[in-house]
Image (spheres, rainbow, N blue to C red):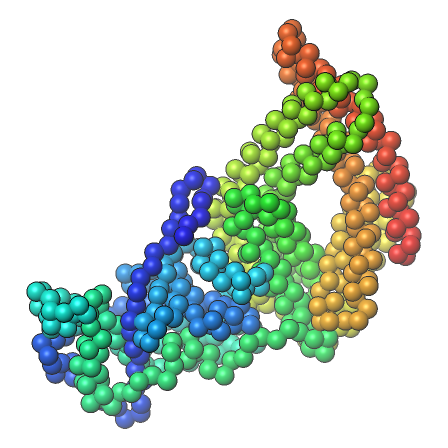
Length: 530
């Protein structure tokens, strides 16, 4: 499996078979005497190292429920992301991906659970620091899985003596645990009969087969899958849940946006806009500095995604205008020429914007954005209002956001021809819409209706914004085509550019004639809602 990066390199995963058993050390157990291994097996000199792993899952523990484990580990000779899947008995399949950034789930591993995860967020769950003392077991040439081996010094198994410090990092479940355990992992090609010889020594010391199938399961003993918040819970928990949900949508769309899958850039941008709106509407629940910092980075990332998305929208709008224009004085031939020229210009713009997005996607600032979002969700910087009852508090904060719409509307009415003021009204209305969306998830009986009403209002102003943007962008395209016409003043190419400019001029005239109607419809929608 693989995924293309910005420079067409391929990032691949590797897969290996793993057969291991785990052992608990009950109180009163002694130290295993590995010098007493039989059947020609010999224990080498122990080597100690420190391994640090962060295990991730959805809040509902969907990955663990599928009997799988997903982690990022540093230290040792196999640093990276590890996905462990069950096979049969003691055998597991382990898929490895490069270590990458700490808080960015490799999309090729997330894709392994696409059907069960969907748009749910994958977040840190447990941090494990393991002091591992590893002893190689060699020899026993007759202990290969396929029969006798000539190499009597071949690696047969690894015995790992682990001292584990675990920290559960899921919100509401913070706790730490410590324990010691043993693991025995068979070498590639070794027979499972090697277990018998090693276990004879371990069991003589008082060790017992582990009752936990993994360190993660042991760390989470008693931790239940997260439940969706209710209106009776705290406002802080409810909003953090909403932020985490939007983050999951963003995670799910990132890989698709990289390869410009249909609508993926748009959906990733929408997820960021929803996150910003949640911070804007419910920011009073958190420390102001933390909100300001994260909102600033979300705005930056939205701008990075905005460039390729704006090119997509522009292409759709311009071609839609050409398709529905009917008779134009410039003539059908000129329209065909204009279409070809415009598609080429917008195509170049989109390609450049997408390349810039991919560059940022692989940059440190994008990594830091993931880290900031994860930290905000797993260790929320709550302020005083966060402990108050969710439904009432979130409704009051949403009404404050409505007051912002009213103030911006009053300002826009003073100079109604300034469309940028109505655009500010639109942005404020969208924040209210997403505020009610979070309330509706509690759920709340009346929020659904209010969410839909504010969505209709935002869409009405969106029509006005599209018209304004199209007018402005057609002006830019006209200038580009006009410059090309001047550079090729003589000949067929120059004439074609001039014809294209004439088509755009007619389109701009039609669009401007519709702007007053679009503004009237948007203002009527605003009056109806008020």
